[in-house]
Image (tube, rainbow over all chains, first blue to last red; front, side):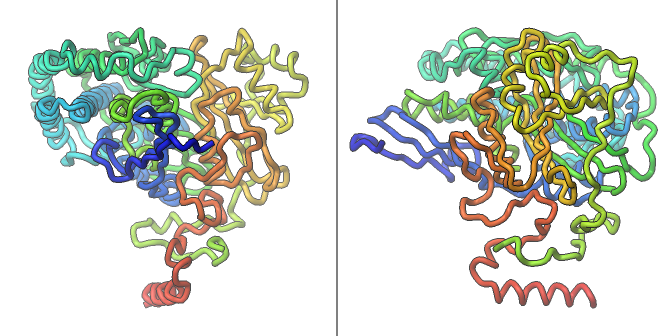
Length: 366
Length: 216
C-alpha cells in the first residue's frame, strides 16, 4: 500500500489555513493528493455531555460556543427545538427579530468566510474589507445584547429584551452600506484571473454525490441542489419573507463562492423586509416559570450559515435538564466531504477546499 | 480503566442545585414513550410500501410533534434503509443525523440508535430507531448513505456501539487510546482525564482536597 513514491504530509493541527485546530494527513504523489485523512477532536469540550447536566435555560449559552462566528443562529435553533417540545407559541415580533438576527449573522459569517478564504488563496485585501463590514454587524449586536461574539441573545419562548430604540434604523443604514460593499468584493474576486484559476474546476462534486455525502448549506447548493431549510421547512418568520435560493451549476469551489456571494444579497433582502415590516407586540410567549418539557424526543433543523443545523433533544419529563442533547453540526458533516473533494488535486488546492467548505472547528468538535 | 472510579456526586459551582452533576441510576427512565399516531391521522404514503417490501421491518410507528418515528428491528435495518432510500415514494436520499440515546436499566436493550432521514426530492422527514443491547453489533449504513461514515464513528466513540461493515471504525473526537465511552449515562461527568493515566495518586489527592473544600 505504501509506495516508495508516496509522501505523507501532516497539515495542521496548527496551520494558518486550517481555520482552527484541524489536522489533515495527506498522502502525496509528487504534489498530487492521493488520499487524505481528516483528524478532528482537538477542540472537543463535551458540549453535549455538559448540556445533559445543565438546566434548559443554561444550555443557551453553551450553544454560543459551537459555531462562535454565528452564535445567534445556534441560540435560535436550540430555543426553537425546546419551544417545539413544549408547544410554546412565539409572538410574531420575536420571530421577526430572530429572523433579522439570523440573517445579520449569516452576513457576518459570510464576511469572515470571504475574507479568510480569499486570504488563503492569496488575496489579502478582501480580508481587510470584509472585516471592516463585519465590525458594523458586531456593533449592531453589541447594541442589541451587549456582547460581540457569544451573544446568549435568545430565550426559550422569545427574546431576552426588546430592540433598543433606533436600532432598526441603524440596521437599515447598514443594509445600504453593505449593498455597495458586496459589489466591491465581487469586483476584487469574481472576474479576477488568479481567483478563477485557483477556484474553477477545483473540488467538483455532483448534486447526487453531494446529497449522499451529507453536504448541506452552500456546498450542497453550489452543486445545484435547491435545498434550503428556510424554504423547505420554514422556521422563525421565513414563511413571510420573499427571497430566492441561489444554486450553482458546476459544483466546484467557484460555484460555492458565487452561491455565498448571492446569499449576501438575499440576506440583505430578508433583513430589509423584516426590519421594515417589524410588527408591534410582546416579545416573549407564555412560558412557565420552571421549564420542564413533557417526555418525548424531537429533531428540529434550521439553516445556519454553514448548512443544516439540527438539534435532537430527548426530555424525560421529570428533570430540569435534557436527558439527551444532540447537535447535528453542519460543519462536521461538510468537513466529511473534504476527503472526497481533495483527491487528485494539489496541496495548494486543499487549502482552497477547506476554505470553500467554510468549517468552524468549534462546531465540528463541540 | 477510566470509567472505573465512582462518579463524583457534588455539583460544580456553576450548576444550579436543581441539576445534579450526574443522573442517579434509580431516576433514569426506561425509555421514551413513543406515542402512537392519533387514529384520524393517515400514515405517510411510504409506510405501506415499506411494510410490503420488507415484512416485519416496522415494529412500531410513532407520531409526536409532527415527527414520524419508525422502530426497526436491528436485523432488518439494512433492508429497510435500502428500501427507504430507493423506494419511489420514500426517496430518503439525505441522512441528516445518526445518533444514540442511552437507557441503562431498560430490559429490551440499552441503546436507541436513531437515524434522521430527509428526502431532498419529496421534502419529508422520518426517524428510524433501532433498539440495541449493550454488546450487540449493528450493521453500518455507510454503504447506503456515505454521510453516515463520521456520524457512526461518533456514535461508536461516544456510546461504544459496534458497527459492523464500517470502513473506518476509529474514535473520532476522543483520543485513540481513550478508555470508556463519554456519552453513556454511567460515565462520570467529571472524568479523571489525563491525570489519572499519568499519575493516579495526584488525582486521588486532588479529589480529596476538593471533597473537603466542599464540606467546609
